[in-house]
Amino acid sequence: MKPAAVHRVSLATSLAVGAFALAACGGDPAGRDTTMMSGAVPAASASATPKVAFDDADVMFAQMMITHHQEAIEMAELATARATYEETKELAEKIKSGQQPEIETLQGWLKEWGRTTPVSEAGHDAPAGVSDANVKTLLDSRGSAFDKEFLTMMIDHHEEAIAMARVERKHGKSSKAKKLADRIMKEQQAQVTQMKKLVARIP
Image (cartoon, rainbow, N blue to C red; front, side, top):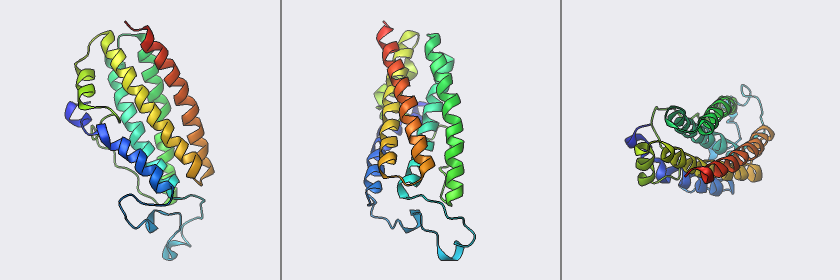
């Protein structure tokens, strides 16, 4: 994860979470036409596309969570290579092994719904909610200081995912997307609790 690549997370995902909540309530923050984002299938392709119950909130949840998970995996890969504590490395591996299959599931749903899947670009984004100073601190950290910075950043990142999942639970229509949102809330909250305990033990 390069400093220049990580630079853009600071504000982007935090703003996106707010935009997600706003759009899920029925409005597009950019004032765009959301007709093609809705669950309605254009008449020309209606016969070729199976009817699936979903709405704009489901689409935004899938698109945003793919990007969010990719960010988490990028951070976790850095931790598996540089963390000092074995528990930090094990947690990073768990994040990678748990979130990659979810990315693939979300990509499959977007394809099924006839919606755009975010293009993955190596280093295209940085962990959400992290300032440039925090990013530099992480990349410059060594030893236990790295573990502490990584865990602090990942706690914030997980809490954003939980917030996104709550919006999906409230406004989504797809039962399978809502079920995944439930799982994300449960699993990532458990990891947040684990990370907070670990941070407290690091000198």
